[in-house]
Amino acid sequence: LIMSDPKCLACQKPSENVFVTRHQGSFTAKYPHDLRSRIKDKTLFTMKACPEICFDDEEVRDEMDVKCALTCSVCYEKGNSNVKFNSMKALKAHLREMHGKFMCDVCLRGRQVFVTEQVLYTRSELNRHYKRGDTKGPMAEAGFKGHPTCQFCKSRFYSDQELYSHMQTKHLQCFLCKKARPNEYVYYKNLADLSNHFASAHHYCTHEDCKDKHPEERVFNSKEEFRVHYVQNHGESLS
Image 1 (cartoon, one colour):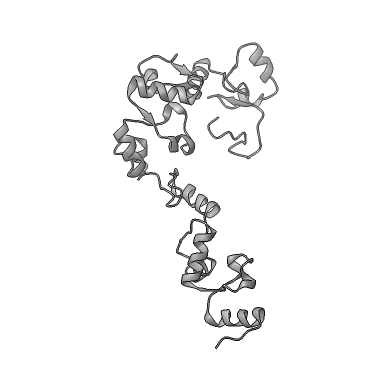
Image 2: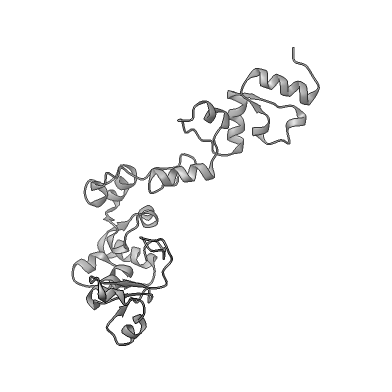
C-alpha cells in the first residue's frame, strides 16, 4: 500500500491477495483455498482502499482503512476519524487552514509511512526541517539532519542516496578527474559546464575538425596524449 509493491517480503513473489492475521498454524494453512468464501461469509474483511487485502479482525481492518485514507491526523487524534479528503491538495489545505500545520513534500515522496504518520510542522518548523532537521519526533530520533539539495537544480531530496541518484543521472562528472580521484564526487550542471572544465583543467582540442565530436572524445589527460592526437588527426606538428 505504501510502496506499491505486491511482492512477498520473504520469497519476493508477487501476491494477488494478502491475508493479515495474528493467528498461525492450521488457521492460515487453509489460505488461500477458502479466501473468497470467508469474505462472502463475512468472516474475513477486505480493505476499502485495496480489496485484495483482507483481515480476520474487523477492527484492525477499520484502523488500516483510516491509515490508508487521506485522513487528518490532528482530527483523528481528537477522536474524529471521519475527516477524510479526496485529494492530497484538499488535505493540505485543511491542515493549513484549520490547524496551521504543514506536511513536508519531500517526506511525502520519500518517507515510506502512512499519510497519518507523516510529521506535521508549523511554518518555522518546516523551514528548519528542510535545512537542519527536526528537534524532536521520529525524524530527530533517526538522526535526520535536513534534506540535501542539488546545487544546480535547487531541488531537495529525501536522503543523500536520492540526491546521489539524481546527480548521477541528471548531471555530469569529469571522467579524467574521476579516474585520478575516485573518492571525490564533483559534478557539472550540463555538457557546456563540463566542456569549460575540460578546457581549463585538461588538454582540450579546439581544432575545427573536432568541433562536432563529443567533448569527452577531444579531451586528454596529458600534453603528450594531446600532441599525439593532434598530429594523427589534424596532420600538423606542434612546436
